[in-house]
Length: 167
Image (cartoon, rainbow, N blue to C red; front, side, top):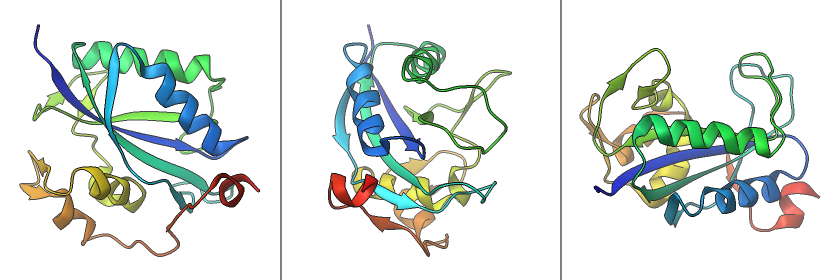
């Protein structure tokens, strides 16, 4: 069975944010095996701004799951970690998004890959820059490095330790 490369974005802005990111990564195993983790960045909220700052991270992983099976696994992890239904761009304990799956372009009712908003989001591109700077966006025909140079990264900074993230 084929090994697939998946790039996943993680975010949390409620509760013990850094612990939540670590718990989500732990729960990926054994089906989704992380091979590279970005630094963690604190980022201002996007979309709906009247909420706490997020911690964001990206991981590169390998899996034998299909893209849809990977999405289903990520949604189960979100629920396991206590994510509740909320309004779009609202606060959440954990958010797990497939950013890229191999070099696939997928557009179904339940799944769009590459993630349709990632080219506009510094909170996604900066963590990706850590682990996959030369990864080529199959639709934009640009590397993550090039895409990251095109977004405003004001207000985003690296978290150095647990006390910095969650006081």
